[in-house]
Length: 280
Image (tube, rainbow, N blue to C red; front, side, top):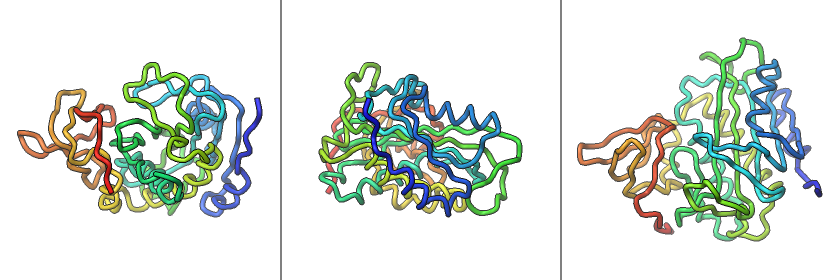
């Protein structure tokens, strides 16, 4: 298997001033980048770490769904660090927004087609899934560097997993949403190029979230929200029209009984009609 040329040194040089003791590691194969960083954290390794892999054997997404790939077909990375925000609500949205906005800023063909589907999926505006964010946290002993400003709240170790389809997956078995890929938008995309584009904005977004929470991002969220104005239903039977998000990142749904907030990240939200309008 030919190894890809990852911009590890450039990313380290750019981000080490923001994340003391930051390291970047590339593995040809691992069961799951999220799982590996959690294993290391529980063994006492809590330094800020970016773990990249070219192939996952047990990759997973939200609700434990499998995420498999052929080498080069996907970007699969996890960022692990100690963090101490006042409120964790909305972190997946903050990360997702940073990824979407970074891809928009790439200037590549049709990048504006990429949006964010609450709470943690990247979609094209035709209703197909481009990628996702998987965030996991755990409480650890108080040792370890905390990213950002001095902590005013208890710190936790957080692993932020990010996956993007560079090419269409060879199999979409088990996927509840049809897949999309970056190369459909621009044939020049590669996994290393996508990583270089999204990682610095994600780190800045995570540190800003630790200091200020999600509320300042609500106005910007509207520009990338693929569900707003769409009729949706949730897995627990709620039906209505998506109306954006609250300051804590909750999904707002206009129902026959009034405006309701959906907080749980375990709620599956699907448009009743998969074809979403293309916004100018």
